[in-house]
Image (cartoon, rainbow, N blue to C red):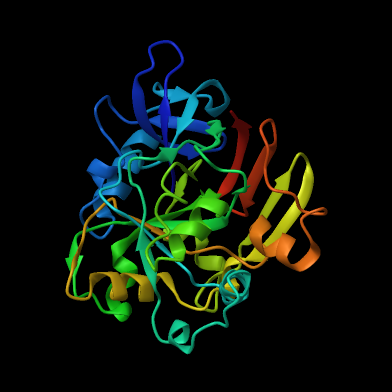
Length: 302
């Protein structure tokens, strides 16, 4: 199923619904996507079936304000799992890729309170002159767990969504010198959605450690980035195992994949030059799309 969280145009009421045949079948008031999590997906599937059977509560997705599928995650962890991007990021700081990268699916905690909807504007954060996007896929944890093994971790993933991990590269570069972060270089906004797609919807494109899903980004209508989720070095199941080792993960937590190959200006400008790939400026329009998961459109504001 394809789940969305939206605000209705007349009242602003936040509702959850299932997208089917270009119509959004709404659940009853007060039901949230996060509130339907907590098991292996049975509760979510049952709620979706009920919504699809009710022909009277539908909405046009184009007439509502689309919000993050999970507007209020309990925690947000972002990984670093595409080798080409990892090498480029280290190279930008004059470093080689440490062999430990191949041993640990490393992550950092980011801000769960800064989730943005797929068409919401992004304000340039204070002190930033080098604003960047990052093309990623995120998973949502479907139930609580601790010490979950990768072999069982698939049942802990409720679904997948497009994610853009906005980055203030100059701020990030300064704080990373102190071997802490990224924190202020990342915590001002993360765009997710438009929808959460359950794993069964992607079973036919399973490939390698993930899925054969094209990941692209354009700036002002010009394509900048093109990668594929199937190129990821670690699986989301391995993420769940690492995150939950000796620690608790909770239903509704968000897990980021890290940036795909060519998936940000940092990598592109480092390879081809800043003149060809300049940092984002006020008024730029950034579109990020992952096949089967949807498209985002963000305008950069002051």
